Image 1: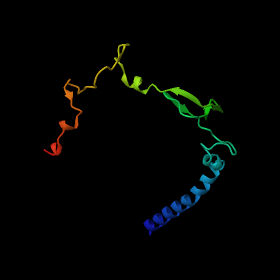
Image 2 (image 1 turned 180 degrees about the vertical axis):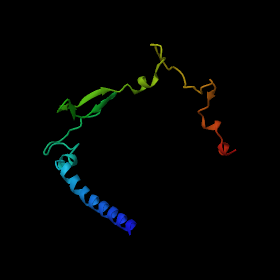
Image 3 (image 1 turned 90 degrees about the vertical axis):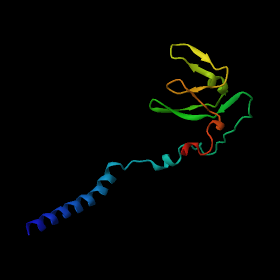
Image 4 (image 1 turned 60 degrees about the vertical axis):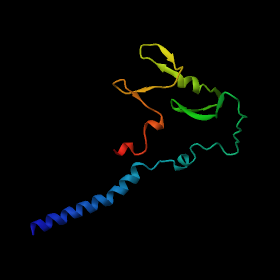
Length: 129
């Protein structure tokens, strides 16, 4: 009899807490602006974003809004020099000097052994043997 009362009281407590949680959640966060979240990334109504013609050696970065401190600021679109090939070849040696790759990339493991990068070095089925 005592165990049955204890179990019934436990179920009643769980039911009351379960019924109160949605009401508490509604009262804690009532001021979410769902329209703002739905419109993030969209341009203002009536505005047209014009993409300029491509330029050789440059990448166009379109204008966008950035949050700076507590306010948002419009950053105009700009052309950026495409230096991907040069940045790809720059290596930082770790001692403050920089060297540039001039030949093919040679990968090495932690013991200094060369890691082959050609597909011929790994025949079909070699991983299963």
